[in-house]
Structures are given as C-alpha cells and as structure tokens.
Length: 322
Image 1: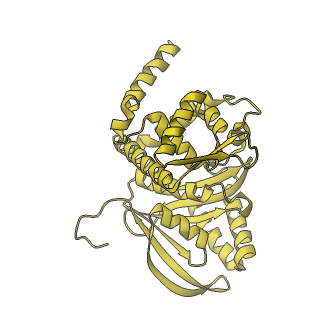
Image 2: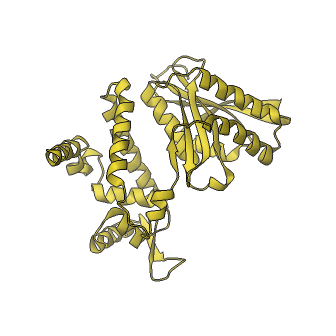
Image 3: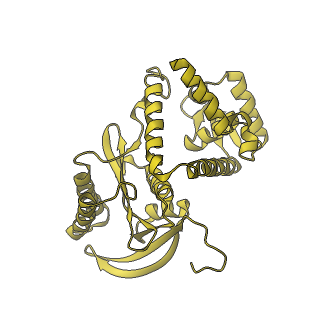
C-alpha cells in the first residue's frame, strides 16, 4: 500500500508541475534536466564536472553532451580545475547566468501560480509537509567522503528561532555593528525593543523570524513584521556574521522575507537602512527594491544617512500613484 501511494503521488506531482513537458511548461528550449544543470551551475560557481555528475546522478556521457551543447550556445566555459588539473571546472558565462536567472524566474512564477491555488491558511502546512518528506527521504543519501557529503551535512540552512535565538539576535547586532561601524549601545537598545515587541505579540501568519545556521550554530538573522501602513510588510534586522559571509545567506534571507510576504498577502515590502551598509543595499537592489527617500540623521553615536526602500508585490494599475 505504501509503494502504491508513493507511486500515485509521483504521477500526480510530475503532471502537476509539468515535468513531462517541462520546456513547454516554462516556455523554454531546455529540458528539466538541462534546466536543473543550469540551476546547479548558477548556485555553485566553479563546480567540477565530477561533482555535477554526482550531485545530479547523471551518466558521464549524458552530462558531457549537455555541457557541449551549453558551450556551443555560449552558456558555459570549461577548463582545468585550479586545485586538480585532472578535473574539469565548469562555469557559467554572463549569457549563461542570464539564462539561468530567466529560468529561475519562470520557475518561481510557476510555483507562485501553483501556490495561489492553495488556501493561505494551508500553505505553511504544505511547506512543512514537503520539508518533512525531503528530510526523511534524503537521510544518509550522500555517502560520507563524496565531494558534496560535507556540504550537505554542514551547509548553511534557514530555520525558525529556537529558545535563546532572539536574545542572540540582540547581542550579535550590538557586537557586530560596534566592531564594524563603531555604533554605540543605543543601537543595541533599538534592536532589543524590536525583538521584545515581536516576542510579546506577533501573528505567525503575518510575521516571521529566520535564523541562518552554519555548522550547527546561528550566523545570521532577519525578520518580517507588519508595518503601520496597510497591507505592508517590513524587513528588519538583517545580519550575517562576518565569518559566514560568502555563502549567499544574505540573499537567501531577503528572498525568504519577500516570498513569505507575498504568500501572506502583503502588497509591498519596505525597509529602512543606512547608506554606509553597502553590502546589504546590494542585496536589496538585487531583490528588486528601489530607494524612495533618504535623510541625514545622527544616531548610535554617528552621523548617518537613513534610506527608505520599497518593493511592490502587486502590480499597480496604470496611472496609479506609486
């Protein structure tokens, strides 16, 4: 009976996502496998061909033919690995990155359209069920010692807060901003008030905290809360520990906030930051936020320029005010 149920779900899901006719489903000339390969290359730059073969469980000849096709179309470049000349390093070209980004956008839109059919109150249930299935089925699937084994076991993850994590957010914001920008204790006090307000009263359907974890310890945080403006979410307290930067955690956390806000029915996401936080501002631009206002101020013992950023989640009717 168990086997029958799993096979029935497989048939249902492959039909639901258009896996059997993927190129037509996403209006792309690439098959599901080719699109998956481009996704992997976009998210793990400079990957060895052997690692790609292991990660995607592909036949060596099949992988080689796909890479040859991509190379011919100007999407990838191949060359010897810097660490082992016997291994082949594969990287996306600028054209390849653009193609991968377009495929990713269309895939996101397709999943968004699928979620639009699900009652908002049931979406979190669906996400938790999918996460549980993935965790159970992926347990021990990568043998120890294979190229990706340690990355899968110890790679960065986003999770909800555990007891003590909210206090950790306050402490680390105070410490990191003091060390990097010289901000005084008034900034830590501000963070403490924001976190305390969330802990005292928040709606799980509309507000959320994410903790980034690496090697079993917290290394980052971000928060989505209701803004005073109607139908507006506010991104707050984005932080990535210095030693954890370079893993794409900042981008993942910003995306998590935007995806959550969209699923929760918000019409836009706003945030306030300061102009000297250049790395964070790049993340906001990449996610589609636009700068709408800025104003000098003196806070946290420093002269700063505060900035308001905005990301509409619902397309505005032509001629409406921005």
